[in-house]
Length: 549
Image (cartoon, rainbow, N blue to C red; front, side, top):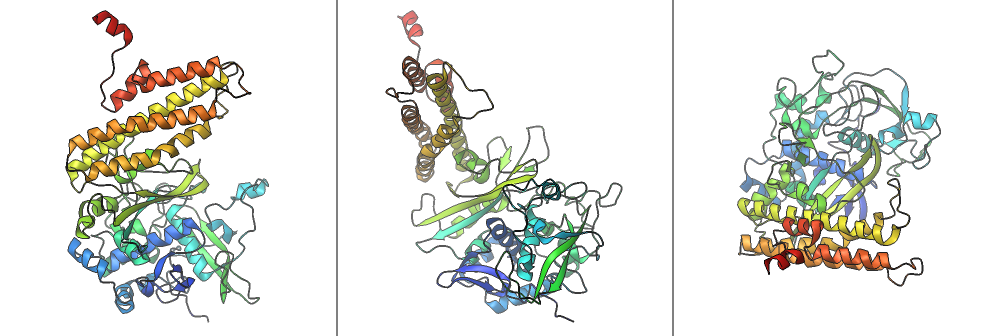
């Protein structure tokens, strides 16, 4: 009989180190100063494993108050301290064996065996394979997983699961949720894995031993969600069955992995390891835990409208994240419809000050890693990662002013981008405008947001670091107009040059440029909206001036 595989004991975590590249470590080693990050080879798996470790720290080393958190940030725990803290949960970290299995159904499930590649979010589904429609993500790329890789893939699916057909539940935050992680860079040295983990570890998730099964649902019979089941839905209010820490250990899918001896010494398709035992198939059943109304500490949320009482998890809509989405990811909006992840709010209001990081600090920079799957009807399109700056005044009231200023600048940019595209349509397609199914102006639109991004953050950083309070934000809005104007004209002139041989009738180009110039001068309906968004005085029209004279 083989020895059960313990994730509490084995070196199953692939990490990137400063000098030696990738190596595999045990959980006890995560505070080593030379470790930079998790390194599975897949960005979605990297983030899911990072989230799991944050959750494990939250229940095992959870600080009682922020000053304890600050002390631990600087005074790293030893391997022995981490082992001692994780020991009460070791029985929940067994990947195989006769007892409860990590993130797997409490029962030995019976049913058709599914290829292990289906654990991966971007693997083609059963219908895709049946219809030979796997044109982009091909079948058969991963036929077997080592035990470390199986744990990682299982963890990633349970964390981000999309809809998988009738009764196959999505993750606690829906399919492909957005995760935001604080990335503290103190001085010139890149942050260590420990600094990233601890910067995002929330308070208040400490577990009493009797509640471990409520936080780690695979330790008890599954709270099934078939119609009429007692667990048809599971909310944080079901305190008899769940603990708030289950936010980090959700188990929407009922899965049991099948292990076989690797007699031929075949390598793992994900990590390249040659493991003694591998997983090639698993069994799954529908109606796992159906999560509703949960708030994950690492995700931003939004309300559909002002009348709604429910906050929904934010999802990425495309493969790019720019400053349009930045406000909802990092600042609480004045109308309360969008709110950043709780860990982001806590870091900016308390932890940054405890670490003596001041607004506008050029030596210490705090980044925000925003990541998640862009989904199309529950099908993953692309996993997106974007490193964004975190900007704060260090004061809650002034942070509200910062959010309002940023929202005004984004609104003006959206109006400017719309006017740019209208001008390009007039200049390029007056005689043959494209129908709505074609997008020949996607490139100019994307370029406009890219050209103005640095200016957006620079203006906000300067305003946040200023002592002039409201006046600094007024100045930021005023300075924003020439930045978006310059970008719009640069893109227009290069996209619709007057001397282009493809457009011999230049009158449309000249006319379109004139309308664009009027808008950025504050004239016409579009110009009025841009000026009003920025709180600038709208100039009188020539007709109004004539009447006044």
